[in-house]
Every structure is written in C-alpha cells, then in structure tokens.
Length: 119
Image (cartoon, rainbow, N blue to C red; front, side, top):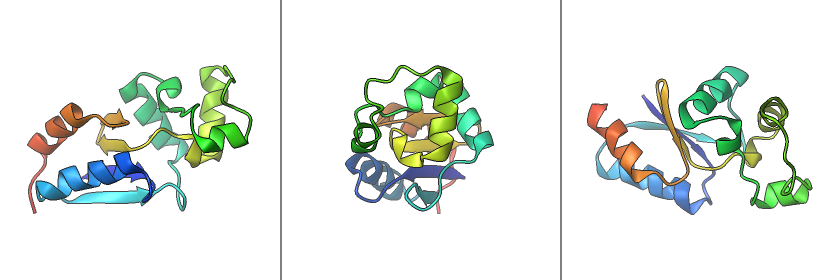
C-alpha cells in the first residue's frame, strides 16, 4: 500500500494526495504532526531517496525555529534529529514498499501508481 507522510496544510502533500485520489488508488495518509516515521521506516526511506540529507528540510520554519537552517550535521546526527522531530522532514514522503520519493515528484508517483491496484 502507498503511504503519504506529510501535513494537511502542506501544498505538496495535498498535491500528492490529490494525484493518487484522481487515479482512484487507496493510500494511507500519515500526519507527521501526530506520528513520525519509526527509525526503521526512516532508514528505509533514506536509503531509497539518497540519504538523510535528502529528507531534511533546512528551509522549513521548524528548522529555523530550532536554529538548524545553517547546520551541517552528518548523517547520524540527522537521523537522530529527524527521528525526534518529524516536522523537520521534507514533505511529502511517498512510500511504496522499498521505493520512496520526497518532495513533489510526480514522475515517481506515476511509477508507484502503475504498480498499484485501483479501488
């Protein structure tokens, strides 16, 4: 099943949800304000998208509030930060098994949709 991790107010997350709804595909939406990714999920998604740095949203209001926008932490430190505070993640994270995308990535979403079963 396709999972979308994001927040309801994020325009890119809404675009991802609309993309899959338009194709009548069931998705599981996970609101990052309520529940983050587990350490295992975080590691799996990071492997699929090219590392923790690809998941870190340095330009987010949350990163600025925490003084992290200019931080250059290594992968291990980023893993700890992202596991502790899911609102530091770039959204949406769209996951289909071992495959994942981060941010607005319609080409990858199309690939996920092609292998998914419609409702």
